[in-house]
Every structure is written in structure tokens, then in C-alpha cells.
Image (cartoon, rainbow, N blue to C red; front, top):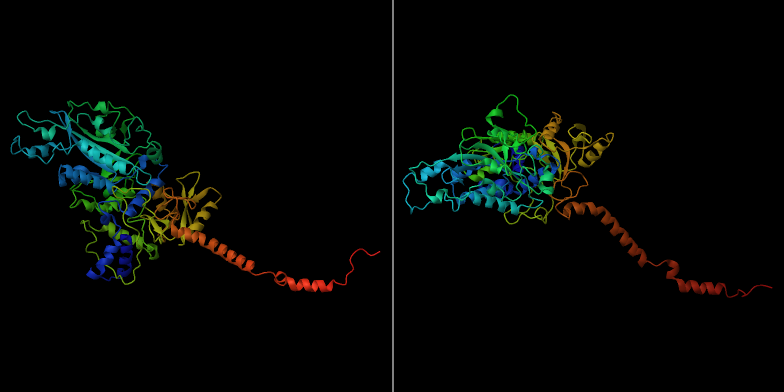
Length: 590
């Protein structure tokens, strides 16, 4: 809905007008932002749920190595900011709810107690810095409620609630392993260190849907469909950094059947090849201002920021568009501020797409580029649009798209097409320079065609036509082409390069004609999540045939009620026939 706001904002203010926020139009602002991620917090917004699901489905036959997932470093974003305590686990669950799929987790091995902790030694030292007494009440870093077991339990609860066709998706746990020892003269209370977690594999093997090197070797990562639906797996545990002491008492090789290990982590000499992942991991500074941008290679790729060089919305979006999963590693003023970034976290869809409004954004020339320029170049403050110019709300037309349904206890398969009013205008997808846009199917646009024999080969048919004609136009090209759709970030860049300078949009092979917010590839493809098609579209489809059938039925009834004249006067006709034939002689003449 925010995209619709910027549509009208640009339309009314492109000539320099400045309409300030007033009490009168604040209701309009609330209406436009009703279904944004920020307004849906702490749950996944309806639009983002559809975007994430569509991107997953489109990449069904693409290797997991091409995954681009939004991430968070738990230490600076959650634990350091909000505390090393049980309440922070609730914040971890919230991040899972809103669609964060990658997490960096620091784990600390206490050489004295031979146990794994979530609390760093610096925090433990600060807790006992004033001296330890046996009756001291520790709420911070209390291993009874804040430990690796409770964190994994939180994760498993989320995995269980999202273990369905609508919500299942790939996840990555990137581990940084550390060692520390307590000096002999320091007494460390058992409530801070005795976690009884002495084996990493014993803990991580309890994660539901965990991916192990034995089932999925690092050198042969499966397709998204094979991983999620054939193997039924979801979570990759990867050792990103191995900072254990060289003489540590912990034998990490005992966990080799559970964990992948990054080639860049060091200390991989004794690991087998099926464990070792060649990953691209960049700080944003390495490519943010580079003259030549490193396009990701064909394996997992991530970009991270720091507190001194945090992501801007622009650099966050750039990492996504290049195929690097962005990992926020700086503290936020409020955890909900991550919503602004998450709205930009799909490589496929444009920001705030697909829309669920009955306003077609493409009606205004250059609207997407204007919106994109403003959003991506605005400084992030946590309330980026709070003081923006507003718009005249005298002639707005809204549609109620239903309330958010992606909650903890309501992630079911019937939550996307349950609106009584199904007037969803934007049911076909066009490609712009910033991603896919939902628009009306009767719009006249050029079309991207894809070579059926070489799916990485795209070409532009620069003849403007509606979506229905575009589907058949590509097929008419010597039988080797079909209307195309980008299925990974490489395809997306290739297809974007085909958009002419004087055009903003081209058709791609994606629509939600069968069911609202259920985007599928192909004109005649049914939504795999609902048995009943969209009410509005279904009515439109059957109206002509229904009208003809009713007309024929009415005509038949009228004809049945009207008797043929000879039948209607049969008595009079019988008298006349009798009079005419009374003089006739019966029999055969001699």
C-alpha cells in the first residue's frame, strides 16, 4: 500500500507542491500503510508473504546456491541491544515471524566448564565485576532460561508452525565459534556457565528439518523444490568462523556430520570436501562504491554491515539486486525499524510489491523510477516517511484486502483468498528496472521472450500488447520461445538490460488470475494452494456463457408455453375435415 501512497504523492507533488501532514489526511496515510510490514509488525505482512512465496515458487528448479535471503546478526541487533535473557528469545521469534531467513549466532565455549554459552565473556565479567555472592539474583545470562537449548526450541516452534506449502522456506544459521577461559582466581557462578550443552551436534541435530552434509553435500546443493518438498529439509547450519583456541579442549571434528564449514573460516584442513562450502561473504564497503560491482558467483553469497558503516536502504537494495543476502549487523533504535529494510528484501519484486490495491500504479509515467529514487536515496531514520510531503485525498478509492493472517497460530493454507470483496485489479506482472510490478492485464507493453532450449537466453519483442496477446506472441516465434520469467538474480539482470530506454515496463510470464495473491507462472496454471479460483475472476470467466445459457433457457420455456396453431385449434380443424370427407365412399372401386 505504501507504493500507492508514493504514486499519489508523486502525482500531486511532481510540479513542486508541498502539502504538509495534517490531522485531516493522517487517516489517509494510515489507510495506505495499513498492510505495510511496519503496520503488520510483529507478523509478516500480507504483501510480503505473497512476494516471498512467489519468489520461492519461481525458483523451484533453481539451486539453493542462488538463494538471496535477508539476515540479522543476533549479537548486535538483539542480544547487545535488548539483553542476554529470555525476553530476547521472543525478539528472535519476532524476526522469524517477519521473514528473516539468515542469522549469525555467536557461540562461546567455556574451557573450564566445557560448556557452550550464548553470553560472551565480556558480559559475564561485567555481571560478576562487583564480586560474586551465592545469593545474587542473576537475570542476565541466566543459563536456566537463556541458553542454546532454549534458542533452538524457539526456532523449532517457528518451524513447526510454518511447516506447510504456503510458508516453508530455506534458512541459514551462520555460526561464529569462540573460546574463553576463566582465570583461576575468578569464581564463575554455575547459573552463568553450567548449561550442560557440551556437544554442538547433539543440540543442532534436534533442529527440525536440519540439512546435514551427509544428505546434501556442499558440492551438490539441491534445487529449492528438492530441498523443501522432496527431502523436506530447511535449515543449513554453517560454521562461518572458527575462532576456537588452537589448543581448545573441544573436538570440532566430532560435529562433522552435522555442520557445513565456510572455506573462509580457516582451520578446514581436516574437514572432508562434503562439509566445505565456498561462500562469498563481503562487507558492504567492499562493493558499495566500487567502479566494477562483483556479481555473486554460483554459490551462497552474503553481505554484512557494521555499526560504523551500516546499511542504507540504497546499499541494502543493491546487495539484494546483486545476489548477496544482506545481514544487518548494527543496532537499531527499535527492532521494528528493520521493517523498512525488509520491504526491499526480494530480488524479484519491486519494493512494496505485489500491491493489493485497486489503484494501478503504472498509469502514471515514470512513477516507479521516481518512487525508487526517493525511497532508496532517502536517509534512514527509522521513520523515513514521517515528515514527507503528503497528498490530496479528495478522490481516493480503497479496497479492503482483509486483515493480516500470517500469525503464530494462523499460518494456514486458507489465508490468502478469503476476502468477500475480491476486486483485485493488479493481476499480471511486468518487469521494471527495480523488479516486478503488479498491474492490470490489459495494459499495452512489450514482452520478454525466453528461449525454451536455453533458458538463460532472453529477447525482447518490442511490440506493445496486452498480457493475453503477449503469451501467444512469444510462442509464435518459430516455436522455440515462450513468454519469459526471471528465475534467479542472473536472469533478472539479463532481462532488465533488455528494457528499452524509452520504456519502463515489459511483460513477464507471471500472473494471479486464478486466485488473488497467488502468483503463478503460465496463463493456464492453477493456484496450487487453493481449490477455488478467485470469485471476481471466476465470475468474469463464466458470465458470457452463463448469460447465453439463461437466454436459451428462457426462449425454450417461452416456446414450450406457446402451442402450435394447428394444435391450438384441433377441434375446429377436425370438424372441417369431417365435413369435407363425408361424401367420400369407403372401400375400393370395382
